[in-house]
Amino acid sequence: MSDVRFVMIGIVVITIGFIILGIFGSEYTEITVQTNEFATCYDYSDEQMPVEIDCQEILQNKIILFAVIAVIIGSGIIALIKGVKGTWDQDVKPEEMLGPGGDKNDSDNDKLNDSD
Image (cartoon, rainbow, N blue to C red; front, side, top):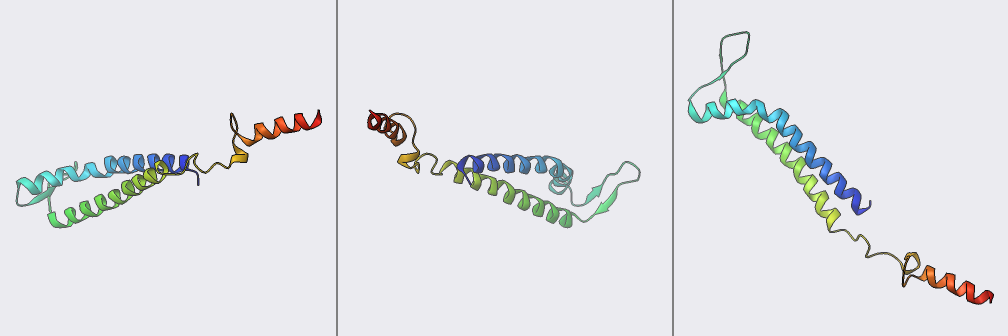
């Protein structure tokens, strides 16, 4: 793939990682506050009374989610680095170059001189 594609893929993957973090990570903020402040955790839903839940299980789910998001964002960063460190214009063959000093311009001039 070309280097520009890696840069674009990296930007998209990093953006998707942050969107997933924003959507699914918000449900763990209340649990994080509860585990830091109190000994027991409760699930507060709209329809019923607070229900006591296992804090460690929820924290494990939080760690798994953040590990998956870290892998997604990390792969986006790797794609960005690969795209930025790519070869870009260094591997252009002399016969494919256009502009001053390119062989295509010289071959056109040679054809004109040969026909004279």
